[in-house]
Length: 518
Image (cartoon, rainbow, N blue to C red; front, side, top):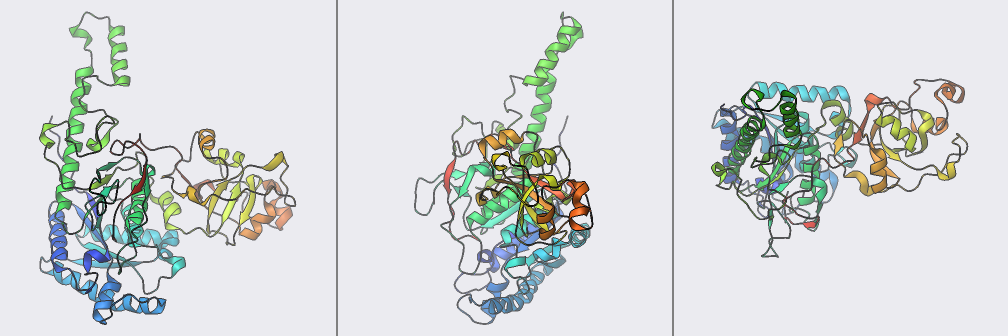
């Protein structure tokens, strides 16, 4: 049976400032931009949908105003962003105009998607533009953004955009070919990391903060990859000076998927025992079929649990050929982060990544178990509150142990242990966990488990913590809800590994090299 390559992919391409303007002269890099335009238009003609996330407004503004370096005063930076953004969009429009390709500008801040209705409006605008064959060009609205409402960098913005449009691929274009186990500029024996099955296996080397005109670095790309893969998006890091590689990488990955599917179908057919053609009793043949289905065919050349053609764990981290001879030619060098097997979508993605938490609600282990079983958060399970937040604002959920088994009352709450800030790197999921105890053995309380939109303010939750829902009215004088947060307004980070250990790494890497990237 012939298997056709998947069409109509949605592809997000992120370009940093250093990929758009020269770091010293701030002159637009027209050679790179022109190839990006040709690549995007070709992808459209092949039936795909394309979104560009383009930095560079401040860099272009520096060129327009003949300034040598990025200023430190925020109003000046925002003024340069206003000057540069219109010229940047004009440049994109002119380049795409040569190929008669319409484009659209979308400027976002975190505030624009903090409201669920506005998030859906932005998502619907993206979908309509893509349906019309238009290429949306996205950037953060630096003219308005301040620290409290910034995405932080356009790597994060591109990952959120990829999740919003339910993209198949996110390309993070940078000034190196891929991730390395060491900095290739200082270590000649640095080895390329081609496939990452679980982002948790990587600890970023933050020694390279980015270019002089940008805000990103390799560490922000790893954070973006973690976010995008959690939404089911295959994320690729590759060199921005060779944008034509995008098509080659996509074709290679999609061809591998087709070959794996064909191989799996062939192996399944070969593993079946046809009772009519054997002397086996029917029951014995059925038992053998069941055993084959559970264990997998021993003759298969590619295990089914290694997706997208990743090497087997026994193979070396260096570049290796696929088991299929038709893919013996290597694709352009890149690092590919495999998507989560159980991606988050829509509302849960918005809860985890569209909203900035305004405080922390500490809950006990009983409340966490109840949330894992799809119950809402009741005040009896709340131990303490940190920060100031209003009704219907997002908060962190942190599990703590009650001290000495003391009963919880509004007047004598047990003091929670300090919050471990480093536990924010878990891959998100919509479903919470079915094994909280196993996770707790590896990560003793306190630990952050997710986000919630609360029905009460911080001051109100402090008053009703530990009480039964029937007593809320007695304590507050009113009861807007029996729940501190409804289950539909709670999203959990994933606490179990989404995949086996990354074969390309072989072991946990203490530093991932990259230099001067945005």
